[in-house]
Amino acid sequence: MRIASPLIVTAFRLLIRLRRYREIGLVALAMAVGCLAGVVVTTMSRVTNLAHQWLYMLPSGERLSEQESLAHPALALIPVAGGILLALLAALTRRRFKRQPVDPIEANALHGGRMSVGESLLVAVQTMISSGFGASVGLEAGYTQASAGFASRIAEALRLRRRDIRTLVGCAAAGAISAAFDAPITGAFYGFELIIGTYSVALVAPVLAASLAASLTAGWLGAFQTTVEIGPVPILTASDLAPFLLLGIVGGLLAVAVMQLTTGVERAFRLVKVPAWARPAIGGALVGGLALLTPHVLSSGHGALHAALASPVGWQMLLALFVLKALASALSLGSGFRGGLFFASLYLGALMGKAYALILIATGLTPDLSPLIASVIGMASMAVGIVGGPMTMAFLVLETTGDLAITSAVLTASVVSAVVVRETFGYSFSTWRLHLRGETIRSANDIGRMRFLTVSRMMRSDVRTVSSGLSLDGFRALFPLGSTQRAIAVDGNGGYAGVVVVADAYAPDTAEGRTDIAPFLRHREAMLLPSMTVAEAAKLFEAANAEELAVVESLHTRKVIGLLTEQYLLRRYAEELDKARRDLTGEG
Image 1: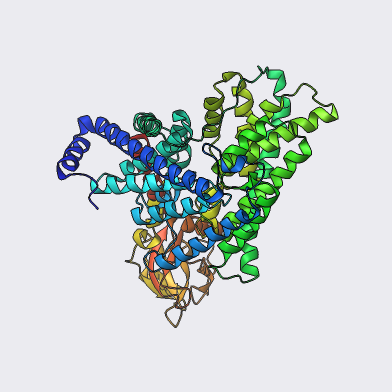
Image 2: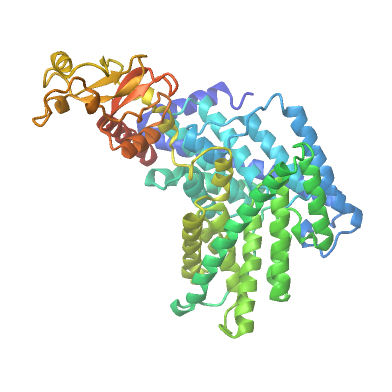
C-alpha cells in the first residue's frame, strides 16, 4: 500500500534526519498523523451510528442507548446476528491472522512501536460490528488501534528511529481520543500516560499538535464526537472533599470487580466448553435479553449517560442500571465481541457516583451533597480504575464540564482510585488483558529492549571446568592464588556440579587432609539458562545470594556453556535503562 508519494516520503526523511530541524519535522509528521486519526474516528463513528439507525430503526439524531425501550422485541436478536457475523469474519481471516493483534500499549512496551496495519484494520472492523450491532462495548479501542497502526506504518516507511516510532504511535492514539471526545488536552495526556508511558518536554509539541489536529479534523468532517455535557456544577471548598475520598475508594474497588467479572465470563465459557465460534452469538443473546429490560445496556452508553445525569430516578434504580450495564459489558467482551470499556467506565462511574450521593443524602450523612458533582467525580474514579491514567480522566472531566472549581475533588478521587487498583489488583483493563495472554507488562514503558538482553548475550563462554572429584592439591596446582577468581566444577557425566571460589581453597582455616574440592562447591542447584532475561537472571542471583552463576545448556543436560557475574549483569541493566531514559527524554 502506497501511503505517500516518493517525493513527500523523501522530504520527511530529510527533515527528520537533519538534526537541526528534527523536532520541526516530527511535529509536522505528528500533525499529519493527527489528521489521519480524525479521519479514522469520523469514518468509524459514522458507520457505527448508521448501523444503529438501520438495524434498530432509530429516529434521526437519537442515540441507541437513550431509548426507554426497544421499538420491537425482535430487535433483541440483533446482537446475536452481530455475534454470528464476527464468527464468520474470524473464520475467513484465521489463516491470514494467526496471532493476537498487537495493540498500541503492547507495541510501545515490547516492539518499539511496530504494529501491523492489517491487524489494526481487522480490529477496527470487529469493533464496528460489535458496537454497531449493539454489544455493550465502545469504539475507542478501535479508534486508537487503527490510528496507531497507520502511524506505525508511516514511521516505518520513513525509517524513523525506535523512539520516534513510539512517539508517533502515542500521537496517533492521542489524536484518536481527542477526536472522539473533542478534548485535545485529554487526548494528549492519554498519549503520555497510557501509550508512551511517560511525560517529557520533548514529547509535548508532537503529542499536543497531533491531538489538536485530530480534534479539528473530526469537527470539520462532522464526526459523531461523544462529548459529555454536564452543565454548571456548584462550587466546592476544601472541606467538601471528605466524601469524595471514599467515593474514590468505592470507584477503584468496583473497577476491579468489573474487570474480574469480564475475566470470569471468559473462564465460564471455557469451563462449559463452548466452542469459540459460538461464544459471540451466545453472548449476543444474553445481551439482547438484558436489552429487553432496558436498552441503556446497549453499545457504549453515550445516550444512556446523559439520560442518567438528567433523570430523577432513585438510587435503587441507578444501582440496578449499574449491575445490568456491568454485566452486559462483561458478557460482550467475555464472549468475544471486540471493543473496550472506555466510555462504559464513564457511564458506570456516573451511575455509581449519583447513587452514592443519593444514599448519603437519604441517610442524612451529607444532606447537601450534590448528586451532579458526585456523578462527575464518580466518572473519573471509575474510569481511572478501569482504563488507567489519572491525569487523562481528570482532564476529560474538566474539559467536558469547563469548570475548574471541581479540580481538587476530581484529582483527589482519581488518585485514590488509582492507588486502590494498583495495590489490590495491579493492572488496568488493557494491561490485565495482556497479562491473561502471558505478558507481564503494566504500562507502555519501553521494556522491549530488555527482552532481548538475555543471558546468552551477556555470559562469558571462555570458562574452565574441573572435575568435582579433583583433589585439593590438584586444584591448587591448576589454579594458583590470584590466577582467577572462580572455576566451575562438573560431575562424571560432564554436568554442572557447582562453583568453586579459588580463594576458598587457600583459606587459612582449610582443614588438612581434605582429598577433594567437594566441600568448596557453591550454588549446586542455582543455574542460569541462556534464554533468561536480565530481570529473571537478577532474581536468581538474589535468591541464591550469589556473585557468579554458571550458564547451562538446559536443566536436563546441565552442560556448562558459560559464566555470568552479578556485577556485569547489573552494569548492562543500568546501561539499558540509561538508553531508555535518553530515548524518552530526547537526550543524545
